[in-house]
Length: 120
Length: 112
Image (cartoon, rainbow over all chains, first blue to last red; front, top):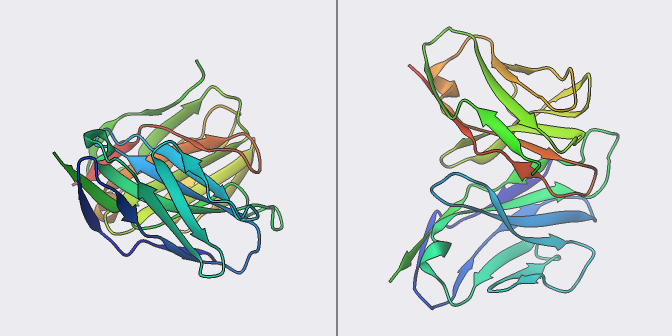
């Protein structure tokens, strides 16, 4: 079974600064997807960024980028030019990329979450 | 616009009562999932379904059941609510094997 670990329960950053959230995972699969989700106080789960394991290039979405280290099984999220609206709980998640016997695909395995505070 | 909705948004129930949380999606997605969110654990998978009449147990399925009689709905039932089932519950759906999942807005359930 896959596991996802976020070792930083809380992080803080000054507005306009850069912050990096850490995530490590464990899997025996060679093909998979990794995600970062944002959960603001409204509880809505918002997909921030997605990385496909077979792609070596790190994904980028505006101010959000990832550092994907497949061999090290590490998937960190960098938020540049932090804004007050970035304050939220962030979850790292893993998903298998194939149907292993018809029972594996689509399911997400989440990390414990990191609460990000942005100071003005 | 297509969407996924959960009801109710908040519920308080008593220990031992049966509770059903509703999840309805209008995307015609085959895949539907129920997760629970607890501090220090993130979201954990309870049950999931890949289509009508298909249901599967997830990581934390004890005390929960689901049924899938149509494409749009996957209700989650707590047979006999326990205080350990106090949590925030999320429903999600996706179209196929490698497609993005969409989440409902969650149901906060308190068992007293």
